[in-house]
Length: 315
Image 1: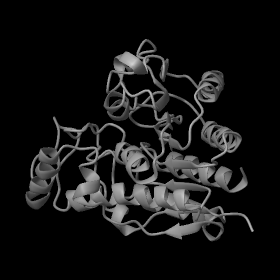
Image 2 (image 1 turned 45 degrees about the vertical axis):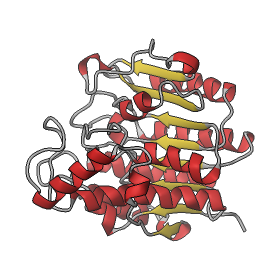
Image 3 (image 1 turned 180 degrees about the vertical axis):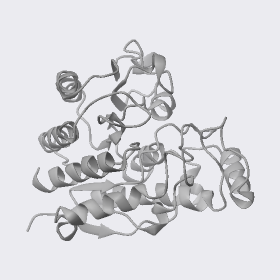
Image 4 (image 1 turned 90 degrees about the vertical axis):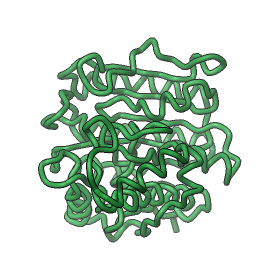
């Protein structure tokens, strides 16, 4: 019997959202859950509940003063956690901690062999820095996952692959001098899009120079441009064999997203997921963790994320 694909979802991570009118609303979770059921896939996956991350887990990546700050803002629910993109709300600490915990549940399922692939819809919060929130992201579950893989499981080389329309700056700059975090990111050209980073010339610092790949695409780029860029990603990942693949599959790169300008279809996400499974299997570990990331057109995110899960089930 094949090892199942795990999906970590539930009310605890559904609460991560910033209210009516904000692009990152709490309805995003339910849109995915409904689509997974509508496509007949809900009964094919291993459902795992999220949990809260501990303070120790959060501070493996984030600074303690920043974690304390989020707790304080969570108690009052007033103001912003950054310069104006990420509002505080009562319970934001608990919701953001659950996102991190959900990603760690998925990490543990993959490392224990309970599943061979896994997906978390409300996750992949790739803008948060070690000491601050940014771009709708309170805690960086990707960064915490990388730290856990190292400290708990002794994983040395981790590949982080990001196809969100926005550059994964919170992950990139946290590990830009770390040669064991292999980073590959296809995104909309950041000169006119938040966060304004991710130029092709950004390839890592010091001993990590050359271990980071940034591929900015022009606004309006679609599946053809993505597929061409994806070939570079595959070549890159094959040059730096990993022991675990994190896949940030933000759906804001699909045509019709209200805040970005790329024009992929969900076929791009399915292709990336399929090829990452092949690469992971060829490299001998088979571990691919998909993280939902961005996406603000509800139909797009539901279809793209479900395409990833379907591909995990067959790939």
